[in-house]
Image (cartoon, rainbow, N blue to C red; front, side):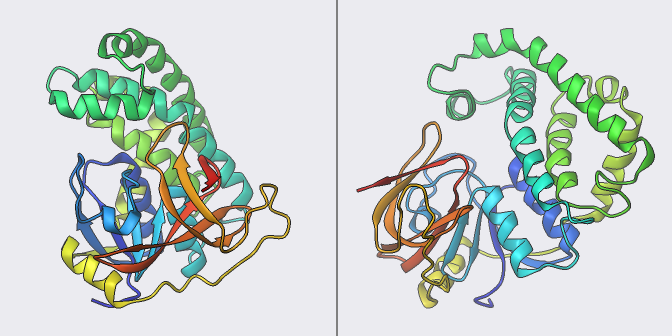
Amino acid sequence: MTEHAVILHHYPQSPVSEKVRVVLGIKGLDWRSVIIPRLPPKPNLMPLTGGYRLTPVMQIGADIYCDSHCIIAEIERRYPNPTLYPGGAQGLAWGIAEWTDGALFKDTVCVALTEMAASMPAEFMNDRGPLYFGPEFDVEGMKARAPRSLANVRVQFGWMNERLQSRDFMLGAEPGLPDALCYYLYWFLKDRMADAGGFLGQFPNLLEWADRVEAIGHGNPQELSDTDALEIAALTKPETPETPDPGDLLGLAPGDAVRVLPEPDGAAVKGTVQSVTPNEIAIIRRDDRVDTVCVHFPRIGYRVERR
C-alpha cells in the first residue's frame, strides 16, 4: 500500500470512470482500484471528499482529486510519458472535453437512460435523472426527448467517424486524451442500446477505432479496500504546496475560507484555500477519520464562494 500510488474510487459501470481508466491505460500505469457504491450514501468516500459525491475520485496519499478534468490533468502532470497530447494538442484537447462532457454527454445519457428505463431500479433513476438533467427531471420528459437526442448523437458520432477516416486515433498515429473523451460515450451507449449494432454500424471508422482503444486496456489495477484507502489518507499528509495566483479574477488566495460547489447544483465542500491557479482550486479540510486532506477541483464547472 504505497502512499503515493494512484487510487481510483470508481465502479465498473461508471461512464466517466471509463474515461479515466482509458487514460490510465494509455499511460500504462499501476494503480489501486477501490470499488464504491453506485448510490449514496458512500460512507467511506465522504471523509475524503467532504461531501462531493460524483464518480470517480482519485486519491494520492492525502491529496484528493475530484472531477475527471482535475484527475486527468494531475495524471498527466505526474506521469508525462507517454503524453496525452501527441503533437502538442493540450489546449485543443481540453476544448474537446467541453464538448464531449457537455451537450454530447447529456444526449448520450438521455438515450442510454431511456433504453434502460424499463429495467432500471426506481431509486437509481430517481438519483441519476436530477443529477444529469436538473431538479425538474421527469422520466416521461426524458423519453420524449430521446429521439431528438439520438439524432444529435448520430450527427456527432458522424463527425468522429469522419475524423478517423485516415488516422488510427483522434490525433494521429498515437492515442491521446481526445480518444478517452470520445470513447467513453461510445462505450456507455454500445451496451445500453437494444439496437446498438444497427445504430453504431453507420460508423465503420468509429468501430475500428473503438477496437483499438479497447485494446489499450486500463493499465494494471490492483484491488484495494475502501478502509485501506482511508488508512492511507490518515497516515499521510497533503503534498500540495501553498500556491497563490495574483491574477485570480475572484481575488481568491491561500487561507481564504471557502466552499466549492459543482455547477449548477451539488453538495458544497468546505475548506481553506491551499492553492489557486487558473485551472484548479485546492482546499484543505479536516475529518475525524482521515485528519487533514487537500481536495482538488477544476475551475471550469465549479463555483467557489467565500464563507
